[in-house]
Image (cartoon, rainbow, N blue to C red; front, side, top):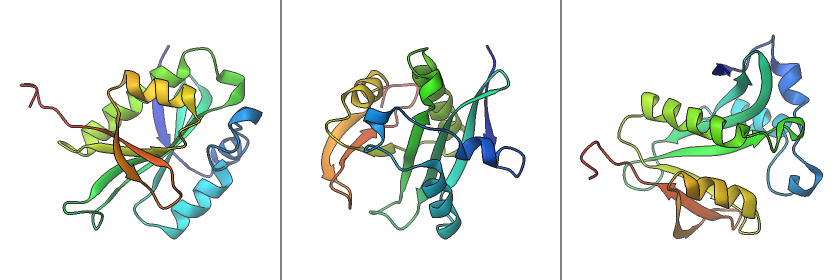
Amino acid sequence: MTISIHDVTQENVQEILNLRVGESQQSFIETTEQCLDEAKECEFYKPVALYADDSLVGFAMYGFFPDEKENGRLWLDRFLIDSKHQGLGYGKTMLQAMLQKLDDEYTSQNIYLSIFEDNKAAIHLYEKFDFQFNGELDINNEKIMVKKFTNLNGQ
């Protein structure tokens, strides 16, 4: 299986807008339409399409916010796998690909995300990738998790 991450373009935007999470997950994440609208309003957001081979299986949005805290923060702000592709291992595979992309683009940065505490499946996934709660809440009262940067020496 070939994993790829592509920018949102005129060619794939309609397919991205058709992505849906499961009904029980809808309260945990905005629709892709809402995400793309936010990306138009905020220059720091970068929305991307997640592909397995040539099939669109998910969506993510990330960005570095330079004015947040002392040195800015890198956020994996949205991450979803379409309901038709859930339960097939794409969450883990695509998250790994996104983390590699973030590391390639933003060397030596901690990665932040926010999550509702009752989104147990997502928390379990993020914890597998060493995300930990940092005790903070975002503006929507979601708990913040962080994956600390570690160099090759483990520091």
